Amino acid sequence: MHYFRFLFIILGSLLLVNCQTTNIAENPPIGEGAIMLNDDQRDRYIEYLAAYSVEKYRNYHSAFTINPDYPESPGAYFGNRTSKKRTFAKAVSNCGPDCLIYAIDRKVVWKDAMDKAELDEIADNMADGFDIEIKYFNEVEFELSEKQRKRFEDQFIAQKAELNRLNMAYAVSPDGEAASMIRINKKSSDQELVERMVLVQCNSLTENNDCVVYAYNRTRYTD
Image (cartoon, rainbow, N blue to C red; front, side, top):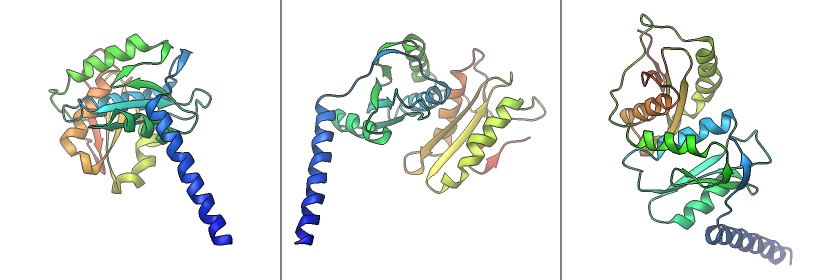
């Protein structure tokens, strides 16, 4: 009796999850209302744009989601080559049950998003920027600013435990202002791709387009 009761609970839970997923896929929960991404959400969004601006993934369906009631969460994203419905469902699932769709296919769809024009322009610039020359940090030319160094320690160093499954890169601008990190699954990336991604991401934050790669996985370029 207990076995069948337990089985019934499990089957009921699976059916509920499946119904919720189907509903999200059929009626994607697009957010609305005046909103502006905070710094952590913006960083994750720029990472999303970089990941799906690469020619290999540019034609994938993709979505970016945030929880407007939990700004501590940076948001999540997902892409799929064939199914837009699965993309919506998975992006929301990766973020959480109360998350809403902020962008689809690298364009902001959140109604009344305050930074839509700026972020859509960054997306367009990224798509055109992957022929960039990869340049590396040289401490003779400039030093990291305190802000760039702190971000490297707080974000890049802190996530080195993920290197068994992720390729990671960190880029900085010579003026000490811009700094970007990107994390991409090892199965779908190599060093050149990840370094191009992080440079495009970093250059989107500065007018000079002169960012350089400071670190890739366990290698730090210091001379």
